Amino acid sequence: MRLDIITLFPELFAPFLAAGVTRRAFESGQVQVKLWQLRDFAEGAYRRVDDRPFGGGPGMVMLAEPLARCVQAIRTDRADAADQADARAEVPVVLFSPAGRKLDHGAVQQWAASCGAILVCGRYEGIDQRFIDACVTHQISLGDFVLSGGEIAALALLDAVARLQPGVLHDPASSQLDSFNPALQGLLDSPHYTRPEVWRGVPAPPPLLSGHHAHIERWRREHSLTLTATERPDLIASARAQGWLTAGDEVYLRGLNAAAKRA
Figure 1 (cartoon, helix red, strand yellow):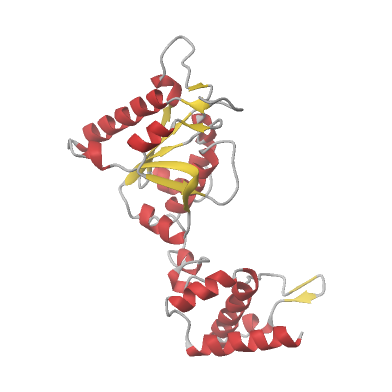
Figure 2 (cartoon, one colour):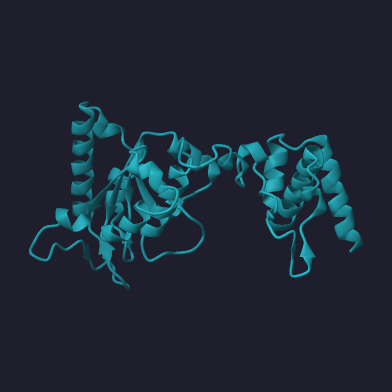
């Protein structure tokens, strides 16, 4: 897959692409990343990419024209690389925006299996709506908060997508045990422990030390349910709606609810 990133700060991405386990995806070319400096597509000596908002108000608004030129240049570059003219129209254009769909595991899986996208990292007060209407096909949000720019959101998507590529993680099964994964029925992962067996007087849970696989799996499942029901009950409701919870899960959850009422 190929991800083209439009940004005013391409230098923010360089350390990320060369560090950590996900660097394998970028070094191998499984995920190709090409950075585009937006100012290269601006006019004038100052290469201006923003201006004051119509109607007044604080902050500055990113100009539509430099962004549109950059998107067209990327489409042309991708088409030349693929040697197919229809690639110009196929690549999605993603804007990181508070109005976007909240990024979740399902969306990450879809992007990880795709041919890539153009990622637009906004700055300032916002982007001229006319560019959004004309060019943007998808909008993504990390959550209900505001960042100073889209670069951190782009890095988050890069990391999430890269770690799902084959061979990037040491153990291919690792991602199957991630929180939100359908392999865990969309629940939170259970707590984890490692050496020493007793740390500052607190022992690791005996079932995890027993070597009894059935007991270990039951402990992990029950604590996954407990953690999810306590911290993210919405995920329990979602898993129930999907038909992912077993009869045993429901019995355990009823026991949790009864214990909570008694407390």
